Image (cartoon, rainbow, N blue to C red):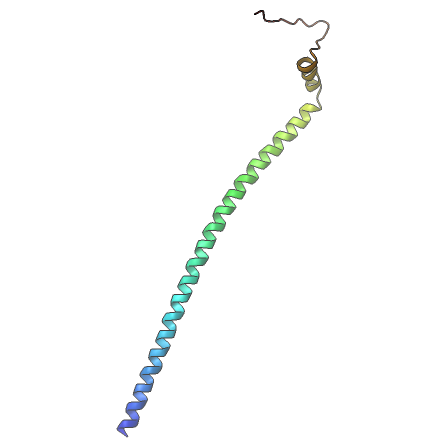
Amino acid sequence: MAGARRRRKDNNRAGKLCIGIIVVAFVAVMSFQIAQIYQKDKTYQEKQAALEQQLEEEQKRAEELEDYEAYTKSQQYVEDTAKSKLGLAYDDEIIFKETK
């Protein structure tokens, strides 16, 4: 009878030891997975910040292009282009030239 109890006690210890090893392995694997997820999250946050910065720059650029489009449709643009590229001037306008 003492031998049967001893076997049960040994089996019980072996079962507890196996369960303990499984739990430790499970915790180790989960810790590794969590560390990887945090690293990916950090990478994604950096990408998001960079993309938000790029979006802001592109919005500023779009605004500048809209302003330039409005300028090119104005009379002032036509006059500036005529003066700079064609050398034209109004009849009552005086032009001074620099002597060298």
